[in-house]
Length: 161
Length: 453
Image (cartoon, one colour):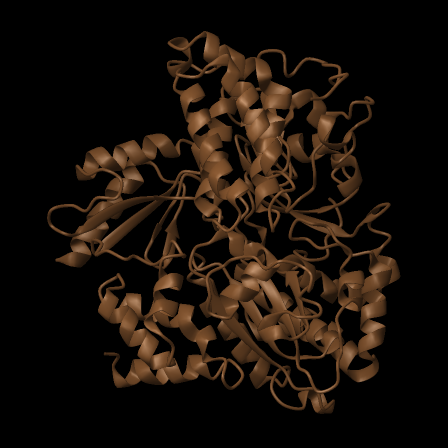
């Protein structure tokens, strides 16, 4: 369940659309729910969002499964989403993905045993001039090098402690 | 230095904020429109400017606006397409991050011209920090009387809202974007009806790219006729080009559409040449879906003329020997890059992004990816190259939306111009996993294929 503060945010989002068009708030609400409930959308979370918008659960499931930013399984506290599309590949993203795999000891799609890190490969994030890059939470980390990756990992570990 | 209309003030410190933007001539165009122009006059100026959609299709904006249906008592909507997802393209992000009020001012003028009282900016979900910047700009504009009720005493009301997507390239297609904005999967709609008649919530809707709407501001400031003196022929005005790949100075550049590709690529004002002292092998000049060109055809057309950074010149020779301006995503490959591997990443991209509605695209993109993966890994057969050609031919033109074409074209162009590199992979299965094919003859003066496949 959302807090009072988040419920006010929900109201504010729904007010962006004409009356009766509250289904338009679905994607914003799923973002909000994912942030609020541990970085992923459980069936219970999706049912809750459906109830907030007075739509059927299936309307939520079909949207949640379509968009790649919604995680339908639990992920680590820090999700490394590394771009692998053409422009990033030209600038060494393949090596960067290999480096992260070795460094964290996990494969793509896996989470470290301590639950801290998940590695995911993604398609073009619109940072082609600043490749290689990854998304970490709300922000992009660009011009990645092995050293920079090490620093990011340390930064996350420090924050988690 | 080339003339600039959009980013001329982007370097000013604090231009992201209202006060600085206003002090530097911001909202002058909005003032001009609200104090003395009718919606029809605004549309007329945009028509005169020759502005063409900057998202990729290049359709004349004024004409698109004139298609908007205006039935009595039905709301109309303007939607700003900020879903920027075409690989190689990162220009709208730059504009929104650094000079957000230019977009807000463009939205205000365009909403007034089209009669939209509720305008949405649909931004790709991954640009997660930009909605905060835009929402701050919207709040500032509202505090200063540029949004809300009865704006500047004109009786015109406008609210602008930012809506985040959630990771789907297809939502850059305007009907998929509308579906997504309605809270659904991003499945493109069958057209007609076009959004201009039945768009958002079945109401008449115009969907325009960020850069297109920002360009309305200088058009009003200097006038449509003056704007049309920038550029060459039907490529009027300036264009944002996002340059990336193996160049010395990747980034976002505003160019007047009257410079040559060679100047853009090699001059220090723009890309600054190929990185690490290497030679140019190939380039995709307009975002991943437009045809890749080998170095010789990039710099000169098949007729031997210098290729220019204009819609027409980039398309000179059609797909046999030309490409497209597209979204302005300029991707450069140096001599050591592998065209097969690069094409594989694009095929994987389109397979990942296909919405799955149309079987030629849903199945074809995955099939192309698998065949390319085999060739790249030294497991390909000579017949696979023809098979790839056949698959892409059967996708192109056979889908509801242009994603199918966008997936087909890069594969077609790679085979058209780099067939020997594909064959080399097949004939040298062990070598091709250890090293790349290299530059071959692509940089030499090469006659255009007499019979382009």
